[in-house]
Length: 306
View (tube, rainbow, N blue to C red):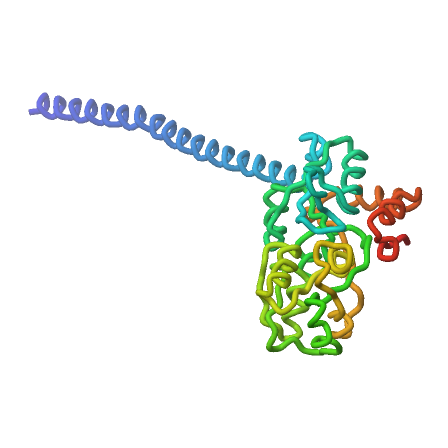
């Protein structure tokens, strides 16, 4: 009996030791698993942090990128414009853009050490064209409206302008002294200051792609009148022009009690090209180039020289 008890006790001790040995052997494995899981978490966290840092760096880099350097690197200054004499236009039979804005744009591009490229745009989409980098600036007798200055980085004003009503010469008397355009169909360039002025006076506006198209509407008799920039009217309407039977009489700025408008050049929001342009322009005013080119196109009374 004693031998049997002794044998049972011995067996129990062996089983107890085996159980302890099994537990001790498994604990490190559990610890290793925990450690491995922790390391994986740390690695993922570190990777995410690194990715975040890279993204932040990339974002900072984009924000700090020089628009001026971008233009220099690609070697071209793409100017967004429309056919708008005397600012940007082509003489009959020529493929070369000339005009006050075109000539000065060529000189600005030269000062940057790049080529100039003129890109005709739909005026209503000028901000989108600028933001998606289809063009590098908007330089086309652009009135500095609130919409423009809020969406672009704009230059110092360089020219004065006003909106005028163009009619057939034999109908001009009907529009003299009017303070309202209600009941009249008026052709306007879509998205222009002229469109806003005509609508403010109650006109039923006919949006067209360019101011030159607005003149065609009046000449064809499909619109009663057109609202275009004074500078364009002076160059394209009246005796000795392609629209000798048209005239302009009503200054819409005066009719609304508004000041003369100002032209400026538009660049991408935050662009460092704006400062480069303002420096260039001040130099061209000082050395007489601006007045010389303005006189070539009959703008000597409109250009700002201060």
